[in-house]
Image (cartoon, rainbow, N blue to C red; front, side, top):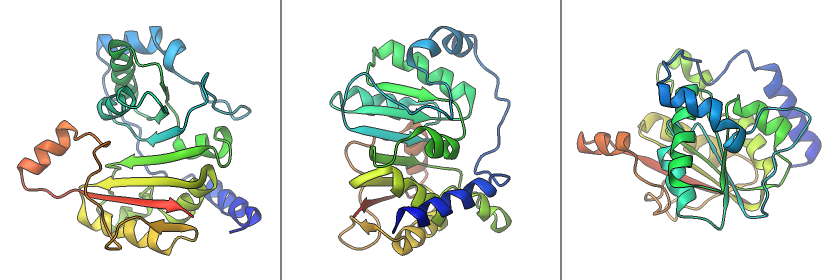
Length: 234
């Protein structure tokens, strides 16, 4: 796909930002989370600035996670992959605060976080062809039909991610909602420039480098399924 076409799709995304994939909730901050946002943000946080690009002190493969929740699995991944840099984006401040606390507790040096709309960060702060991997785990499924348009995995968004991925970069998705998994598979299968890494053309077993969250374990104990997808930017 040529750069101009992708640019046009990005403009389409910008024009549709009245429809967002998230709702800002006023979740109550614990004292620890509040202190982390004040004291640790200058160390591990990156402020949104549409006129600058995200950068790290060390030149390592860069992994972006969109919507890291409370950050436990992201911190775990960064802790066990010191050969990579990680950038996490989350809009809910309690999760950001909790993640900052975990980063400090584990003395993680290869993880930075942002608290902003991921689409705007991708468009304005992530250089083209700079990401080695993008991961989106358990995004809001917006399971009611009238809300499906709010799902973050949409054709235009997938092409935006592709523009930011390096050649052979990976997009890794996971969900515990079967209908959303089917939606993800359909969108990615039809997306130009991506190839499914599943040998069966659908889903993959959970990779060892994706930690199981407490939420996921609880779901598994209740018999809930989890679907992982990985597509490569050809």
